[in-house]
Length: 78
Image (cartoon, rainbow, N blue to C red; front, side, top):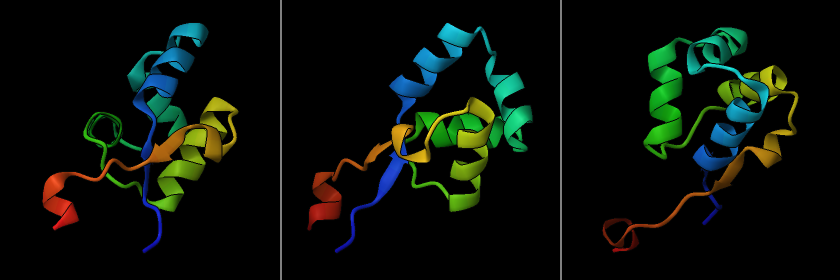
């Protein structure tokens, strides 16, 4: 089974703080709506490649640096 990745909320939060960028501004720069970006960051959902690439471009980060392996819940393990 392939490893699934989700956005790393901590890394994105630190980037936003360090660069003084509100979430709304980051969403606009990444070309997504605020709600979609907020849910992708906070809910640990797997993100589509286009969102990941747009977010990486908006932050100037390598896409691999803003994701982490998805945690497997006990429900998913069964």
